[in-house]
Length: 95
Image 1 (cartoon, rainbow, N blue to C red):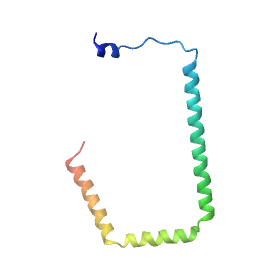
Image 2: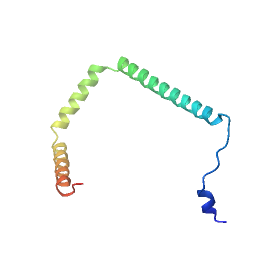
Image 3: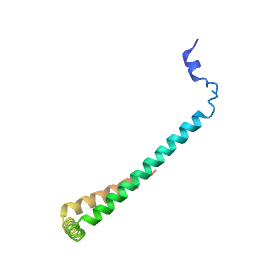
């Protein structure tokens, strides 16, 4: 007997009195519960972070960092290189 031929044939359906449907329903409930708990945890963390972090100081630090990046020659060279690569690819490698 050819084992590949035997393995490629579909199996006959097995009567399970709804066992498979119950297992799938339980798995879906667990996935939904996990997703809801994850979303709740992220929301609670975000609310606590907003309440406890010094927002003005954080905004000031981000603003200062953005100003330093904007004045950086290396950043502008990297942006120019990315633009040139993008234009080169569009010109020579159109799909």
